[in-house]
Image (tube, rainbow, N blue to C red; front, side, top):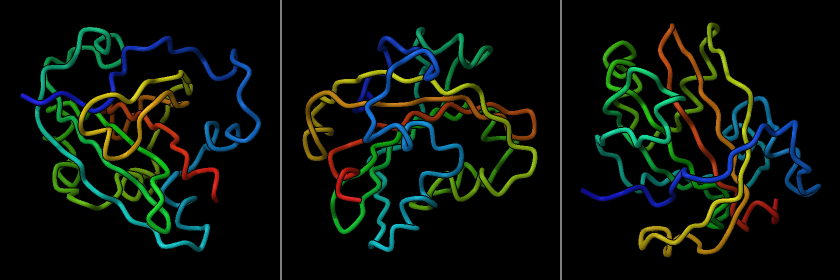
Length: 173
């Protein structure tokens, strides 16, 4: 079974406790949909589904998604004008997918376009970390160390975890 392209096992800290790089601060702290923000740049937006598969939830994520043994791990690359800007990884517990069927059928539709349309959406505090992209799948996207953010969203009482890694293309926007 393939593993995600990034490991979420990092030194995550509350964004409010970290000195963030000025060029990325507004992106890391963006309260709304990153998809909408990327599309608002006026550049050609593209979402590529890299892989999606059911996996055992890693032990280090269990405190964020309690009572979740297995989840759908979805990995996408968001680009503008063919420049990779954001690698995103979401963990959707099977109970969440069963309760919110549209999330199970996203394909190449951005997750943000679905969840940010919901009035009852709640979000945990944003955590940030530096993550290393070094998996073979990531090599086609980027390699090295990048800033990332993650948070747990709750929609209709169902949790899902989203992590986003900000790639070099973000600086061209």
